[in-house]
Length: 287
Image (cartoon, rainbow, N blue to C red; front, side, top):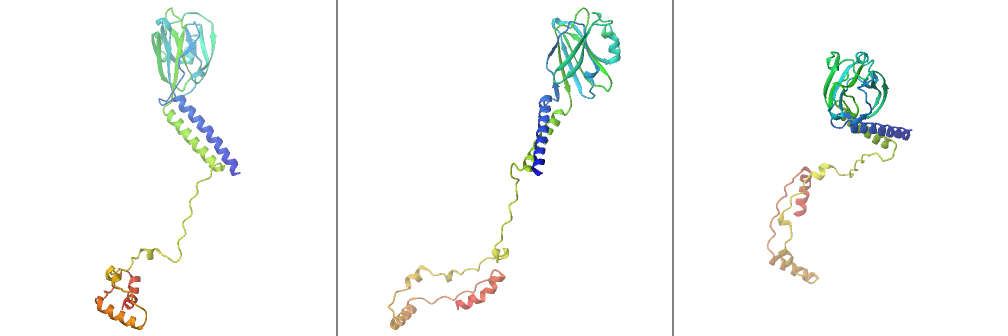
């Protein structure tokens, strides 16, 4: 059961990480998902979107249109009802569906070649702009049904029309990166739960040496008197003598005559309670 749960977490983490990575690549550090420059094949004087294309609420949209030969163009956002009434009898191309990054479905509608009135003379546009050879409009999607229209003014048409659109979602890049990192973490957890790699285990504590405590190691040794150590002169003064009773007496006499009297030993100063207890026995042995 644990192995099944681990593989489930692994699969979920991989999917979440892929979704986050795709979002981060699509929006980029500037939080913009752009379509790039796309051509719409038409010779009509109007290109208009249906309400489903701009049905999202909240994101900021940037649309730029370009036409060759410096033709005058108009780009405007309006309520769908007002725009349908305005272009009801005009030849146009309707964009019925849009999928990111760029997949559109269009429908041509027949009608009059000329617009019923100059678009700049109308006052019901929510957002509008115009230019020669191109125009650019940036707006936030409202919570009502709206449509976007690209219109040719004067005697010109929209042949050779190039459209570049971009969705702007503030913070989308950061959220996408965070989602990808979270997915990687879930995947790693799934790997550990499934037992594909061993989990990190804590090392058991060391075994203390029996019979010894920390206090005993910390106590200092007894102070050593330099007079207790044998010197090189003491070694040279010792002479080899023959064995026997006479040799023993002569060695005792010679040693007593040649070596100076041994200096009195200084009592050792104890450094701890344990050393103080051992000090009297040491003094007795030296005496």
